[in-house]
Length: 56
Length: 194
Image (cartoon, rainbow over all chains, first blue to last red; front, side, top):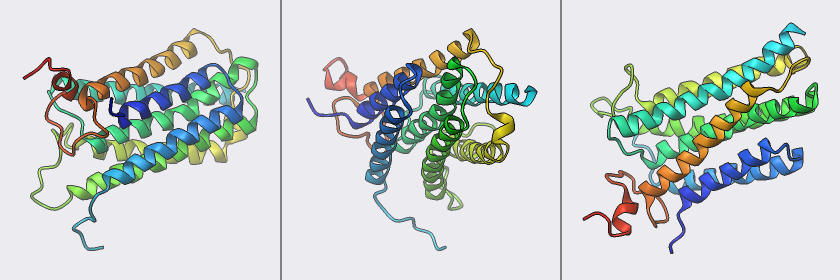
């Protein structure tokens, strides 16, 4: 089976929501949240494949 | 104390608003037979990260008055998610900003979904700015974590699970989504579609 990034990332976000709902400690919630944010940003970086054809 | 209660219910409205946006995304996807692009899916993820902030504060109200530390932590989480989302939606707006470009997908009320997404992220940042300035007045106190809070949080969690399932159908057993998805890949990967 090939890993499926978007699906796995939604899984991490679901894990973060469950941690929030269960009232886990601030530290635990922030760890899962930061993990989710990092993987989302890495996926964003992966999809930014070309520079914009614009002049700023 | 009235303002503290208002601050508590504003957080529910925050999460509910993003639930509405995520549901709207499903309506466009299934009602309009559109396939969300990778950047669209990333913006959904950013919306979820953003809404986790107010959800965190709401849950903290279970144990009584919310501390300023937890209130600002939740708002900080929301700002981090909104900044990431704003970067993604700005990127997509700029990809289609050149005159003559039809944009990606159908417009809703004159604006494409990624432009609406940028509007929501900016609204969140403005809300968080005011909520932090008036943190002492708006931090939840004298409130009860009851069924409305529970219902909002479960709706939000159910929508995350629904997004995970839908994106799995669209992505199939592939690393990432194609730039311009045109089908639900899982059906083809499993040999159920020709």
